[in-house]
Image (cartoon, rainbow, N blue to C red):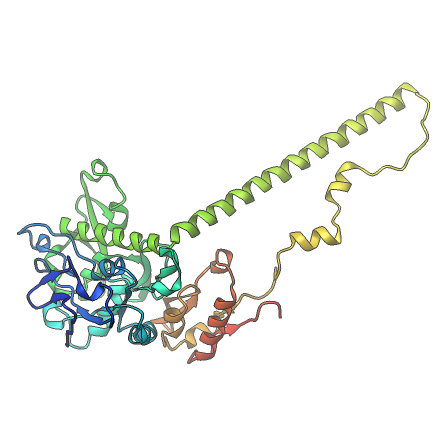
Length: 433
């Protein structure tokens, strides 16, 4: 593995030392330089990508330093934090990094070390992908050319299930009858750690002891609520049977820290603004429903009063007044007009979704990764059972079109992804056609 760092940015991985107080590469220069760093996450003191000595129960606690974020807050610095397992994201942003000449640029990529991480020689790329999926090493791009605000500059494209604390994965196991089954679980930083030998001592079989609580729920509890409870993650044993593994306090702390980092990235990427807008739209819809209901009830009351007065007049024998053709208030208020109907019916209502993968076509997926890596806003990776065996495939995120805004850029990307699908199972529907 080659580690190249220039422009006096001291990032000595082998010595586990980082000097980022005055990164020369992040200062304005007449000839902007580019910094490249291959980051290896390993549990040793002081390394920016490590979990600190706390995982070993000795030494001082040291928070992880995020090289990409530190560089991003220097003037006009382009930062590409990527991962080689995401081929599309990696190649596209490598080109952006190499062609950026306005100011310094930093490329930060996660790489696995088989011997130190305790993984197989052929598992490097797969574990690099797991680092992204588990939020251990999210990808992002900070491009100062995209706008003046952080939300415009930061892009989290390439990360799975943006908007959620944890992505979802399917755990394969054998049931009591020896049949292969799938169980969907949130893929936390602890689930990443359980796959690597270096963290082996932080997991022990729970054996049903104590009040077991899934780790992703445990970290949501207050300190006093955690008393007497044991956090655990799901895994499988050598026979592929389901097992519960209790996790150490260090792994709990790691999971909390990685969630804080991911939430901060979401904030920098403007997700809090999108959530506020969605909440605002939901409140408007609620108030509109209340208003419509109140109008309906009021109109019903007026009609009841009019009928009561007519019956009273008929019973009293009052002389009939000249008959005037009237229209009930409710009929006026509720009768649809061409103009009103055009405004209330949303454009494209009832039309086919922008993209779809049918249930019949899903087993044909070759898992080429193109759709959910290049267009993670619409697609996600999942597992299904095919002929009694689990198979990793892609699917359109359930309910995604109810909460996403269809933009010309999204339509263009969706059309390109559909064209690039190896299995040719993605059906693209042009809006308005």
